[in-house]
Image (cartoon, rainbow, N blue to C red; front, side, top):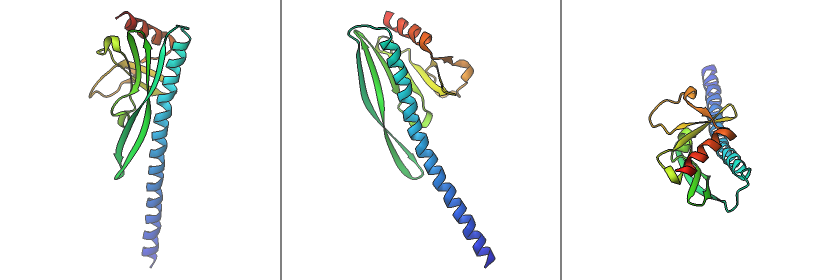
Length: 158
């Protein structure tokens, strides 16, 4: 009987651990959404600080889903497009955002020049979009107001 009681206790512990993993996963999904919106808010603020006329800011939606724990999780993420006349700036989650949390930053004037942005220790970093490579933070540049303006200026000139 003691063996059964011990086994039941182990099962309760593991069931609790499974519930915690699911709760942590759901929290991480919402944290990813908040991270994206925080970056988009920063970009909007930097653009607004330019005090330009006739700039259009459009917020759209992108629906993402992820299969995990034999369940489908769906989340709606914001897509930000800022129009500077003939050049549109995009800040949006990549298609597989829920798998890797990469945010894309690019302009319609040069769609081959796509930057991927990641967050680390409450700062944002960018590099040219990479596929199939392990991320190495030393190859990323911090995205701050100055580096953003340099990117934007180059895109507007394209």
